[in-house]
Image (tube, rainbow, N blue to C red):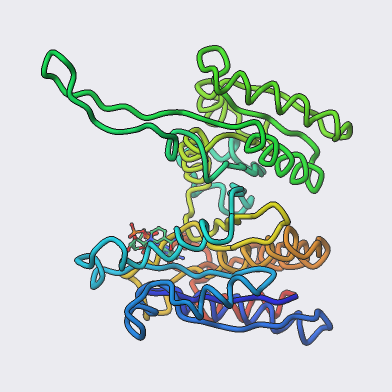
Length: 354
Ligand code: NAD
């Protein structure tokens, strides 16, 4: 199992160091991992003038999976767009064909108080949102702003999904559901949009190959409401790029803790890039304040989705749950009555719990 590790900027190197502690502990326990690191984002720009240098891209291409920290920082904000750290992540998605974005939104019982919803509504919530990442209205042509005959300007974008694009994300959704509670909710707007009607038809066709998965359909406006009303009804949700963009942010905020949430972006063969959903948090970088659990949980996702090591992934997640149950908290999730620890201490505690 060949892993490219790209720490990036800000808190990137601190949180990745904790992820590596966990992987190294598993490696010492017999898991065959080959790990190599490379600079990315601002850190890569500083040494090579390019946020995604050829050597980093080559390492990422040759690896079976990528563990990514975060990129970005105020010192790079004035650079031309092509040189900005954030271009590295877009470049990796494009070059590696990472079309399926998986974002779990899970509430650990001990952290239910951190949600903006009442604890009894969110406690035990465990949703996986699968968002198509490379199509839809964000990329559809034609698009632009044009001048109408009456002199007024008009903006336009095109929502498009081909059958093959829908089919591959639907397969990814069913495969993910098979690894969980075997419930898949496909979210669309087929009462209004042609694109969504095709989406629904194709998802129903693909469902025939997964008789063990219970498929349901929901309009996106209802899905947005149901996430707030009763988020525990969902297991896996699969949807297009724009609906997924909005719903995944909504769902992640229900958990109340940005430092806890991992993500994956997969290609058609389950090669993936795994990263916490948060950014490089320059405000707390270098202060041993960052929560490394989103990164550690990203490593667990990597073992589950790219390497089919479900048991090892479960072991990491159980270790995180155990550390939280013992009352250990980084500053972002600290509450009176719990024990405040730093980034490195949290990583050590997870390794000890493993
Ligand atoms: P951010 O996610 O970095 O930070 C938002 C807030 O959450 C900050 O107060 C930060 O301290 C806190 N936070 C984030 N991660 C945390 C953690 N693990 N533990 C504790 N607290 C944490 O978002 P931002 O401030 O809007 O962006 C900062 C930089 O990150 C920008 O340059 C942005 O472009 C970049 N960014 C990168 C990615 C990525 O690499 N995929 C994603 C989002 C933002």
